[in-house]
Amino acid sequence: MSRKTPIRNRGESTHNVVPYVPYDNTSDAYRPEQPRKPETGFGVYVSLASIVFLVIFFWFLFDLVVGTWERLK
Image (tube, rainbow, N blue to C red; front, side, top):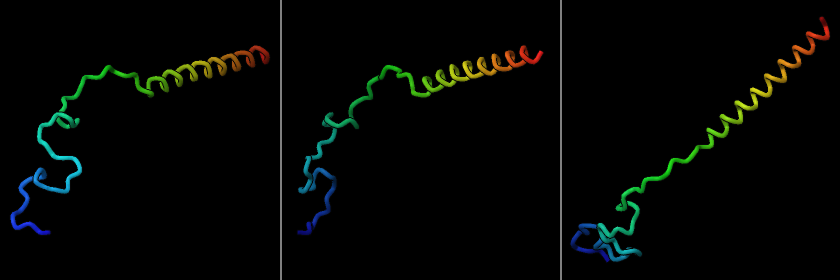
C-alpha cells in the first residue's frame, strides 16, 4: 500500500471523498465575503430596557420620598 513517490499535494490522494480542485469556487474559502446589512445587536435592546427600568424605578422612589415628606411635614 505504500507509495514509492511521496504525494505532492492533496489532489493526488486517492482516498479523498470529495475531490480537491483548487479554485473551484464551490467553497466559501474562495468566495468573496458579501456585505451584510448592519444588525441591531441584543445589547442595544438590553440597554434601552435598562434605561427605561431605571427611569421608572427612580420616578417611583422620588414619588415615595416626596409623598412621605408631605405626610410627615
